Length: 388
Figure 1 (cartoon, one colour):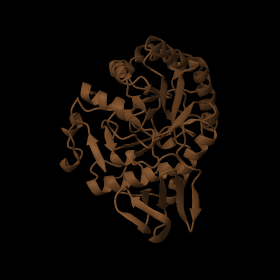
Figure 2: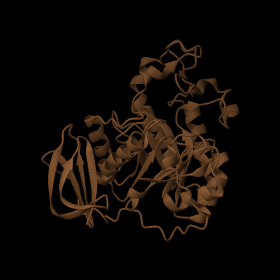
Figure 3: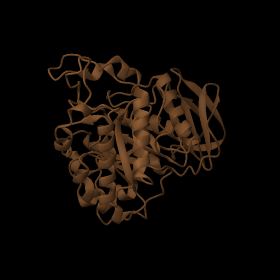
């Protein structure tokens, strides 16, 4: 159940009024029940008032701030004062250059840093977001990127590291356009070497920032960049923001879970970010959040974080995060095609099949912390989090 949506976003009318809850500055963070999981937040909104920042400090263990970093430095400072343990990352794009970026004036004269089309003359533009694509193999772009990140970290001690966006395992041809929107592609050699160019640039960045964190927003589709970074976000963990209704593909579901598990084996941070599209109703939000959250519990580890968004301008908090299930007692397991994971004081059960299934429990549990039962009937693609 969604228990809080921060007041400033309510004016945009993105959620039913029945989902909106208010809070007071006097609310005690210490008095709230402990969360069963570590949570993260992607905070791209233009304005956050002091009461919202206080709640962010008390409810999220990691925050990714938006662009430009200069706009969010004061927010990071306030959060750090409220809760110094909160990990805070500023935003930097690996391969995009917008004309409104704060370093555009430095970058623009260096034509050789930009990615050209096959003719070697035209700039490539992202179809949707309209940014200019940078050449990841350009020594000049690499040096500028690393130095700009180092400068931001050295000047602002509230940052724990950098969140690197648009880290792809392959070049996405469908997004490449000329400035007049005609389809255009870079040279085939660049596309073939794209993964290795990305790896090399990330390794250079990580070496340059030293002890600070480098967290990449990647797709995990054709490999990953965990070795070259401190961890990764999977922005479409289990569910994508593109649809306002619950829709999960079994293959994508399993890929999300395995990416999370792999990050735990490799002792890397993992930001499991789930979303549902704008316009979703209360029932769809609850169903989607619960399925994504239960999947996260199947694979969560000490370095992982969970988040759920309608968009990256809102701040949502769910009471399921505070169910007292304790710590995991081992990895997930599968029985009769149903996924289970034992916790010290609970049990997670996920049915990924497109048909109903029945489960008999060895002892009585409280379903989502409420009614007690030993017999479960799980709808297609549904889940429960059980509390002893």
